[in-house]
Image (cartoon, rainbow, N blue to C red):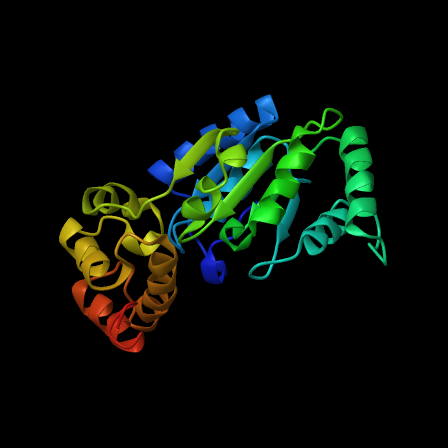
Length: 248
């Protein structure tokens, strides 16, 4: 199960458009053992949404892998080999690892999630496509990435033509903030839309990670001042503690 940023206590999962779309996409990808992409700017809850969807689908043992910028094909192969519990990659060549990954994925199909997929090189993308298209393997391949992810992946025609589901997660609009944030945390229950928009306009800008960061501080201030709900004074004091806002 996904965790809220900063392990924010009492936070609830919001049915944002991005989360709902990701759940549907992941469900479809698992059923079809297909390739899909979930992308958008940092802090919008992409990884959280994928984790939630996999857990609800009973795929809590999905293989998750992330890599530094521009990894080699061998590094990708070795990381997947180890994440799939095949043991240490040792000194095996990338070709030996590839053959053993095919054997493992043929014997035990599962979902593979690549986080920060925008870091992959063309060679690494082609390697993943090869694994997924191999006649002996059957698994869902979910590519999750931040800024520039779709631009990187869509430059590879062999991959792009195989994308079965694509979710572009975007920041919440002001209307969505007013409709959803009242249930995100107890300090927002019954709070006027004007106060929620004050926070969004000056700090969060529809970004769930920024909302979580703001809430973590604001909830402590509410407790310190004996208030159950957020108000404009608490909001402005929270801005001050964060140096004026998330983008200041």
